[in-house]
Image (cartoon, helix red, strand yellow):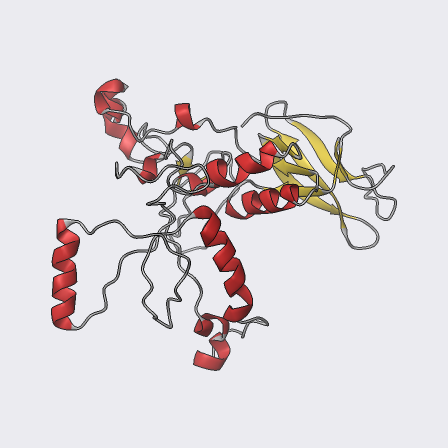
Length: 307
């Protein structure tokens, strides 16, 4: 993914972040005919160079462990993981509540955490939309599972999910490709579960076992956490953003840390202020709309413009 700067170009939509949600929005909107600018806080991603699933220990200094073995203390340091994932990222304003030790594994790169996530893809069940009605906690959603089911179908059909149809109310069935055959340990676990009357089914993961949309099926190297050059497992960087780029209607600006959404007098978002991390300057992706204007933007015509 290359950084593209087109000064003065007008956009219909500004998307912050290139992960699962941002990538999906970019694909749908650009294919629908809209011009989109996407701000990504991290650098570009080059799978053929940045992914590590077929790197051997002998190819790396200190076999990838780093000096004194420090390379394995944090996934963000090791040379064997998909790029730029870490529990802590230098310069990030992130804290935990007193007395807690909550840690959040994050990324700053095109595609974000979709480059190395576990790819477990479960649907919300009907009961998940009725928390208050079912257990008295929280609030019921204003929509139901049936409202979302067609969108689950659409996403699963495009990204590819393997699994089996089981008719389990708490884990609704989806549009599945065949699951991989179980490994020896999984066969033993399944037999034990059958004897104990415990339900045991194949995982549901966004890894394709059959070719889909030009992506080859998984070749079972079992290195998903280190990236997937063939794009057999799902990542926004390889499955959603490329088709959006191919439309010619997506401008991807990398190393652009969004700092503030500016709001006009009408209460609507009217610009995104972001920091260009390479030049350390503040810039704006702004709408050239005559209906709203923050103090630091100028308006000329409809749409968003990179300023």
